[in-house]
Image 1 (cartoon, rainbow, N blue to C red):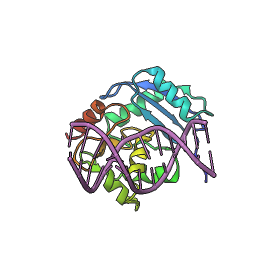
Image 2: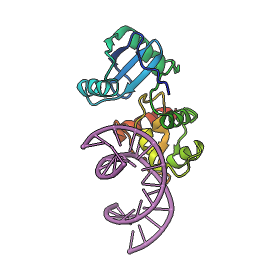
Image 3: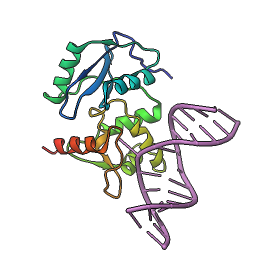
Image 4: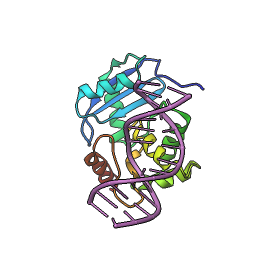
Length: 165
DNA sequence: ATAAAGGCCACCC
DNA sequence: GGGTGGCCTTTAT
């Protein structure tokens, strides 16, 4: 199978958001990464680990425009998520959840036709490369508790609160 | 080829 | 509240 790697003008930057500073990475093919790391060093490490063959160039201007579009204008720029077929099907299902609503890991598993793969669904959601835009924060446990979040439960809670309005 | 590690769940206590 | 076994994918041996 063929994966679209961020080859054409790969860029990155750190930008302020309503949920703390984000690390955003993109190319002419779209956004390939949007994370909310503890600090810039771990943000860079994460990029390095996931895109070991790509060297990103810092581009604060373009990133600032993107971040404004995302968090102020509510626009949804082109995405370029990279993963296995299983992961892509799940990340696609996440994008069908309307803003302000939540669903459960079980329902996502059912939505992709793999009702038994709930555990793997949780793992794949945890591997979501494009936070916020691929709304992994809208998935909670079937018992109503919040479940996990890669960048801390406080962040998950904050985004959900923010989306209620 | 195999093991270990997950943002889970149902079921028990 | 906490612990166990089962489930499935991914990553590291």
